[in-house]
View (cartoon, one colour):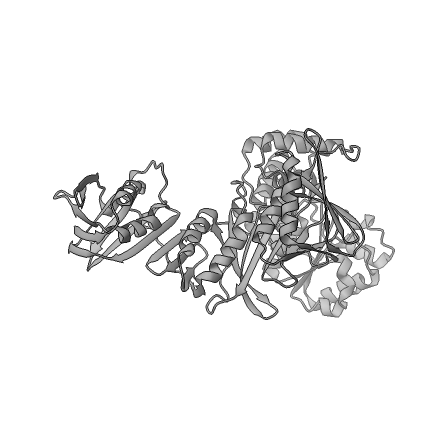
Amino acid sequence: MKVTIEQAALLKALGHVHRVVERRNTIPILSNVLIRAEQQTLWLKATDLDIEVTEVMTADVGTAGTTSVPAHVLHDIVRKLPDGAQVSLEQSGDGGQLLLRSGRSRFTLQSLPASDFPDLAAGTLSHLFSVSAQELRRLVEKTQFAVSTEETRYYLNGIYLHTVQGEAGALLRAVATDGHRLAQADTPAPEGAAGMPGVIVPKKTVGEIQKLLAEAAGEVQVELSTAKIRFSLGSVVLTSKLIDGTFPDYARVIPTRNDKRLTVELAEFARSVDRVSTISSERGRAVKLALGDGRLTLSVNNPDAGQATEELTVDYEDTPLEIGFNARYLLDITQQLEGDTALFKLAEAGSPTLIQDREGAANLYVLMPMRV
Amino acid sequence: MSRKKGTQPPAQLPLDLELAPRYGEEDFLVGPSNERAYEFVGLWPDWPDRLVLVTGPEGSGKTHLAHIWAARTGAAIVPAARLGDKTPAALVEAPALVVEDCDRARWDEAHLFHLINLVRGHGTSLLLTARAAPDQWGLSTPDLISRLRLAPDTGIDAPDDALLRALMVKLFVDRQLIVDLSVVEFLLPRIERSFAGVARIVGALDREALALGRRVTRPVAAAVLERMTAA
């Protein structure tokens, strides 16, 4: 194999694929990136056996061939090369090493045979649809904060992507929950998504796709089956296993009859929550919301540190209510909201509260209270 | 545990995200206490009568058996409380019929009596579930009582240790919870030795672990047990 490529192009591609490689591996080849040069293209692939990322780019291929070298080392080398430099990669005669040359730099990397590199066989992917990168980014960004990090709750360790029938047609919906709060975001279902199985996309995959989406525009092609999902964003393709579990019937925890409506100025509310929670204990983080006629009193009582209260003028005309929430959860949700105001629909101190930008918004959040 | 208001530390409440139990045939655990009922359900359509009772304590798997039977027969499942929603004639249109929890709801005795007669006439089958035998349902229609008494009753008895252990593991699996076997061994000698006792502790542990955002461990189990005992 002999190939020459521009430093920036190689760095960008390595940047996409190397992240999936675990820093510590008991199987040596999993530390490597697969490199294949053929027909004026350079093809890279990395995997952790759950996720596989590939990228194709144009390169000046002198001799076709394949090999694999440590992914993070190669990325670090290319990162430190000067901008605009030409990088040449050449396999040694016995195939055991890869020689990297750029300007006056020369590196020799130990390689492993490409034939040993694992393949995340995707099998047949039964459903295919295209969704705009912008909409997919919104679905992921608005829900990923609520994904559970408790590993034994494996069925909550991802975003549940599925289709539902909405009032104005089919919707592609993302839902995540950690059992304390739930986030849901909708977009009109793209053609081809109807009838797809509901799938749980693992947290690590969500993180990777989020980074890829940050620099993507246009359309993203999504293919999936009950076991795997594949996102194609231009020259980058990410294939991932799905979580083998059943997502709970989340619809039953989304309140539909909460009739106490509270509207707050979003920024003012978030700042107040942040201020009063300064005094809360690390474990508790409870902030009490006392609602009365047009008034909201936020208070924190920490027996070890002291007390804090703050009063806001709000739009609330129902019967008085006292309800406690985890301040961090409230702030997490207010960060996702986009309007100037936020609508809270409450029922009672022990029941879930619905939070949205406004009535009928495409994103909704459910927050369970704290007993305070 | 009752504490004075204001002295309880703030605690996060969990969303009610419980998963539906699995009622597949492969999920049913057979032990000496329920073997007879399980085998009887499997004998269909060679039943000695068109009407069969499955009685057993709370959580003993009556509903599970009814679902297994319904999957084989295409039976409709109707809670006794909703028996009056349809006429007996409409109910027997289903290939077979399950009426659930006959002793735990008020229903029209004439309605069930008529239904039993129609079932016999149509040659279809009817399975009734209840916690207690018909004598204890508080019925007043002598003809209905005698028909129910004559029906074969595949009673489910109190479970043995092996079945309780297997049931606890199954209930954790149903809830997709990864729990160390040492937790199961810790719990078994400390809970009420019944199907319902196992279901209650598993449900309580699931909710507590979700509220705490932690895995189900022995300390979490001990705390939940202590609270349940004190309640």
